[in-house]
Length: 190
Image 1: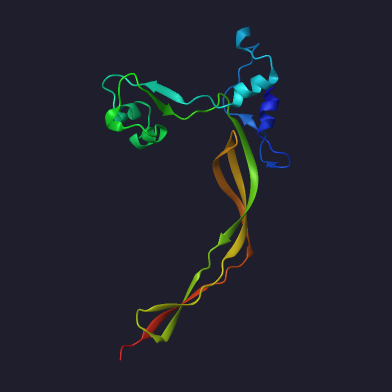
Image 2 (image 1 turned 180 degrees about the horizontal axis):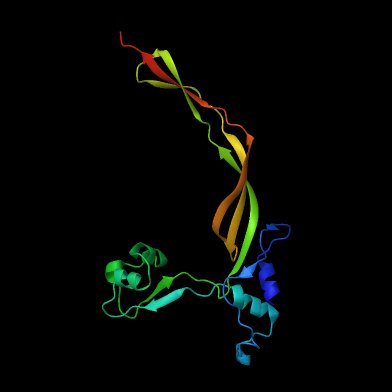
């Protein structure tokens, strides 16, 4: 079952830099003495329970609560708290009202580390040339230049297929950029 869960987050043909693993400690129903009623017998149901996102964390507003007080209590900024609760009017929060205090997440997190390749543009560098035909201080684009291209190999860390970290392994220029040429006025005033 656990191998099936790990495989769910591994696309065929993709290059893995490490074997997929769980972020959390996974209980062993026998060794950890898990009650029989807490063990899912249907593999498909068990898989869904392991990686499906549950409902978001909720909080019931108490008398005297404010968005600022609730946000601080749960390590959020007021802006984050309000983003989780669109339509909530900060000045009209009432006791016994239910608010969201955290994003939903699955009980188990599968970490996969993949090697990915992307093509990225290289902006044209600027090349400034002096011009005696332009008044001092004025500029004029003579040639807009063209963007180049590079192939970037990345190390990407995913948690349940959501990219959480990316670092560059290597990059290689495949098309050199052509500089953007700018004339800078150097003519003296008449």
